[in-house]
Length: 150
Image 1 (cartoon, rainbow, N blue to C red):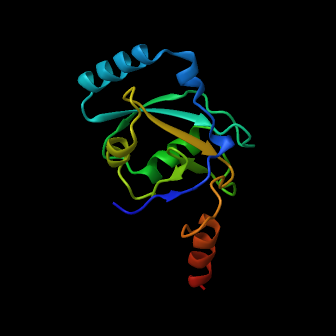
Image 2 (image 1 turned 60 degrees about the vertical axis):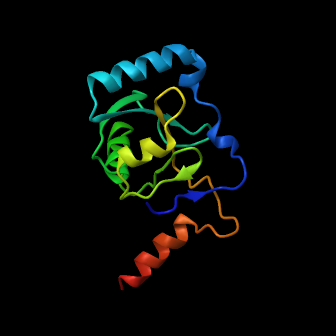
Image 3 (image 1 turned 90 degrees about the horizontal axis):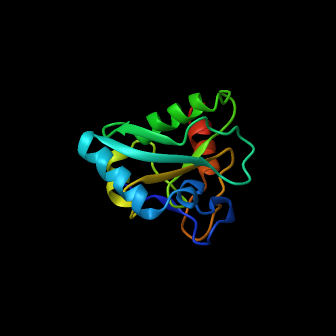
């Protein structure tokens, strides 16, 4: 699996999940276990908006995602749920990291699922992880891809 871009500093925009604050650990664990037993080919995902993001709120936080869905396909689902226009950017993070869009949700789940059995994803209209050290900004990747197409 390709390396996920990471911010080396903690990011206040990615505060503790409100889902975690609203539901005790034991209840979340029981729910994710029940879901995984009933739907073994699906991934339980919690999606929440980053605290200071200017994109719309999502209408539901809990998703049961096919294991073979790519991150890019899931981002498309999020875009549709928040009714984000095509010209606006959206970034989806897992533990303050931007996963590669070609990665399968099952691979991201296997590597980054929470102790409660859910995969937590945060979305924002900005690339909130920044550039430090050996990481590459998403904007520079986009600029290279766009400029190389001319």
